[in-house]
Length: 285
Image (cartoon, rainbow, N blue to C red):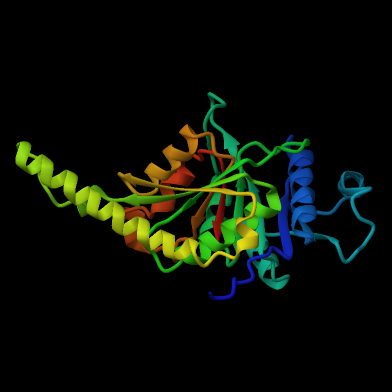
């Protein structure tokens, strides 16, 4: 059995904006630091004033007096550049970002600044749709099982994250494109052929994912119900829909590669998730 890569979030960074969600965002970040025994970096992009400094210190008062545990950074400049640069300089393992509700308050999306940070960050990113002052239990985690070089790392990380958050179930979703069936259904014969082809693909995908699951250390599986779920459909959209329907508390996805011209024309799988967040989303790098 191979050793588990170290995915623990030793340094967590969150950008601060003096918005109505300030308190909830800071409380979510402080809880994550407790769960992962991490260092917290709070970054405010903008001018430093006495009023802002007092407000932030009041929020984190009682959390930790250890200056090595909590660091507050004040910088002016472009928010995207500042957050990414500060994360790189401090070797952050995780950036936390908040999503915004649409007009009907039932759907969430991330704004242009958060989207650019998500695409260009060199570390993992956690997108929160409903940051809360109170603890929100995490029961069910959905993680992608795509046939991709990054998937093994993402699944292994999902188990460590789930243990730290106290999740009871992990579902590994294997999204399979309809194009892989390669059978045009015209009559009963071609229908049976398509069904058989789907069964063959499903079995192959299940074995591939099972090989990864076999490499997860037993201590990270302890107390967690593990399920695999093949889905035929559009990659990115299908897993997001599944997470929403099943009421998952967290969706964990592979990070995309660097954005290219063609990605803007033919969006990466993750873009379907970012367009309408189904739940909190953790992107693993």
